[in-house]
Length: 238
Image (cartoon, rainbow, N blue to C red; front, top):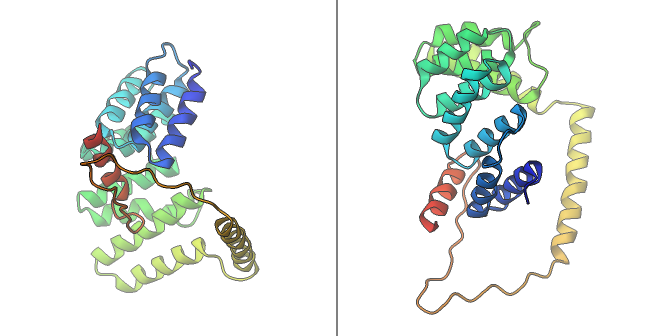
């Protein structure tokens, strides 16, 4: 199919199911389509990033930024630049975009932490916690709170670090009726999942050809490098 949206959705689905070879194939087919809208080109670069091809993502976003220096390109380029180790390039981008956008301010704070300028990072991150610059999306707000706690800890302000960490946790897990409603919804979803699991009939696993070892299941905690291992194993498999 030559529909770029279909190919991008296929890339996302294959990535989530762990079929990274199929994900790369679908993404490459989408990338080969000419004259795509700018939004789709940004999504393609983001898909390369999620597949672990940071260099390709960085190159494509850089080309787009040179033609269209706008926040929707600059913000993901800051994140990718930080990931590939271009810290000062990312800081220059953040200065170009300005810190009026919460995501730019967050990444500038994280980048300053990478340079071990924790006092400057604290000054950048604090307005994201309270006041007019506080972001509306919970993920940015939560990450800023955790980063600010780390800054306070590095600066020796342990009480403030604890308070910042506690506030971040409370925002992520709001107390009272709202939290109870979230817990009830989670328990209902969990019960449905267990019921579906009890009635699930798994097909017989394929028998590996003679001479090949049996497959192994690798698992790990969240944010412990599982995606990196999957990307490298898929690359080895080809």
